[in-house]
Image (cartoon, rainbow, N blue to C red; front, side, top):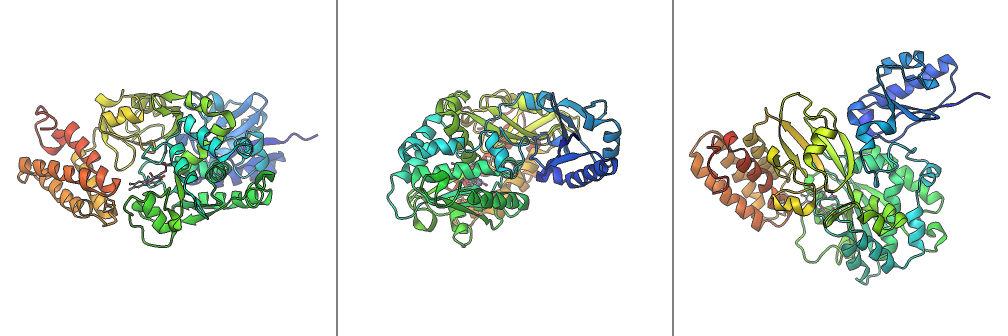
Length: 521
Ligand SMILES: Cc1cc2nc3c(=O)[nH]c(=O)nc-3n(C[C@H](O)[C@H](O)[C@H](O)COP(=O)(O)O)c2cc1C
Ligand code: SF4
């Protein structure tokens, strides 16, 4: 009997960007040339992005990791006997599961990513897939909503609103049609967890949306996906077709007699289209323009019907909550921040990637224990947490636990869990100017504090940087930030002051100000 060697090469966009397809093709060609029988699986990424392309070989002890592999390394790997379980190669990292970056994580939402073949339904089910949906089918809508409420799950898209409470509003709003709209616009700088799970474990999102549909009485779902994610679109569309073909979507979900179906809609390409009411406008085929609230989308949302709007990670976390129970999930985390968050490490870090951990971990642990410090070798200076509207945190705040409330306490936000690190060459006044300019460019234009304020704010910061009436302009900038914070219709204008003021308060010297003066006069 010939032994078949199972080799895994990610098909994730981050791996493709550094040549994973060439690696996979070369492995197949080299194996054929040598008469070695292999099964090549194109898995999702393990999230150790600095090691991509991370190829793994299955052995009786577990998978052995090799990376970063380039096509030119492949012949040498076969020469060294990687297919026979030999580890004596410079690119070998031993058993994948023992790599500290992975071993020290708590993967709940990402439990299957990198492990299964993303489009294999049998692989999905062999690793716990559809267990949550099977249980949901046996429950009443109110029981499902209660389970999600009890888990403590809060929206992972940025606002951290309790998911169960949102679902309850939709459940209790009578209507002939309700919708589930998944926000997959993932516009925040330094974030990629939505993309990774849609490419690496698409069925979990489909399962989560179906459970949401059963919970609130919605029969139709849409995934609003940014146009920059073609690989995620392909994975989702194939997964939807496969799930429908075997009855996990469509007219008789899992033999329950209940109906739910969904489709992918490609976004129009603006940051503001990630804001939920703008997203609804865009889904309806209009320009992405923020709607005034009330009415809440949960009452009058897509096409005027009650709509659950949730981020990809929120929905992809629902299956494990239903499968293992609310108490299992809420045991992770701290305070009112329950469960885990897939943090995304980006910017000037040696080891960028995805780290899923319970709330309560600190930035310092993420930056050094996982991130390995700066890629440049220079001291780290600031970290922007939570996307372009998040504050810049100086080292004095890196020991604050990552918890929604603790971060609000330091005028920062956890948001979607993206971290962008900067070393000591970063000029924080330049980054503050960039934050205002970003707001000016991306503003939907509906309200004055944002539309006009961001343009004036950019000019004011330019004057401060050029030392043109500096003290007066700083005063003006603080005043303007107050107006934007209090008077904007949505968080784009309302939170742009976070990066601006944090840069000004924590790094006054970069604005040419006296660093010994009180931070916020
Ligand atoms: C300017 C702006 C951009 C946003 N972009 C996104 C996004 O790309 N993805 C996302 O899930 N939420 C985004 N949000 C948050 C959404 O408005 C909304 O709170 C979220 O989709 C709700 O889902 P959740 O409760 O599961 O987090 C954005 C908000 C604002 C103000
Ligand atoms: S704050 Fe900006 S993006 Fe939001 S509604 Fe006002 S103009 Fe539009």
